[in-house]
Length: 296
Image 1 (tube, helix red, strand yellow):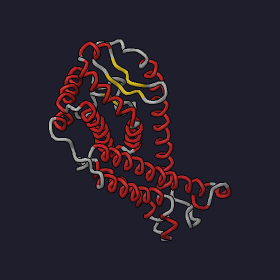
Image 2 (tube, one colour):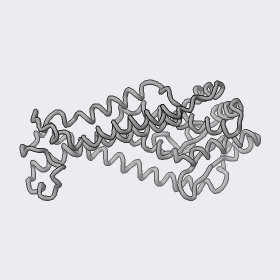
Image 3 (cartoon, rainbow, N blue to C red):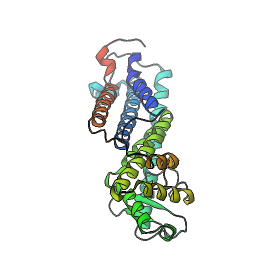
Image 4 (tube, rainbow, N blue to C red):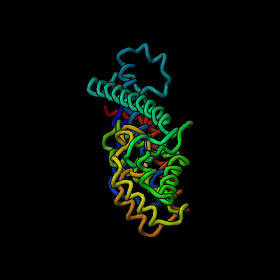
């Protein structure tokens, strides 16, 4: 083992923290795709490194395990790992697996409950609009929202939520939430990802209805009276709703000119970042053997 084993994870976390520190000069579509890609690859790189170290520590304690493990999963040398390195790796791997399992189980239950609620207006006076993903899902709205908004404003709401459903934004939100749950330094990136997803739906709704000011007024009106989260914490449930994160900034953006489409630069940035981050994530399990330098 050598210290370079930890390099891919350290680099990906650093890049993720940098991207979460400030807004990206891209259309929300490409910002969301870039941030989701970085979140996933960073989580894979760090988890891969931790599991890799933990497996090799166990192999040193029980040499018989090496007959059951593929060669690529083992370090190039046969020296056992020291406990100060191996034990924390095992603890972190177990804790990360428990967090992911708990979140997925809770989200599954939440989605089932939301699908049942989406079959009819939600029985509450609070103005709630929610995109419920998956088969049997749809747009869940409350009686309070239907009573508060006029036909044009309701069209804005449904176009916004349909954008979430059409582009499967729950997957973006789940990716960011999982990455932030297992890697707390990624929470700012997760927040920017949620904001980019909402801005993506805002822009599609504005383009469809043809009135940016109407979309801005509708979002502001709903957000001022709606609860901060219709189905619990944004970290706990992968749902997207009209009154999501960064309402003030979203309204200000809608009152301005539409953002550039970034038809060339957007895909290029996402593709480049995806290739770099994927390479780092894949080498999280290979760098030690590739360099062949023993420093620890």
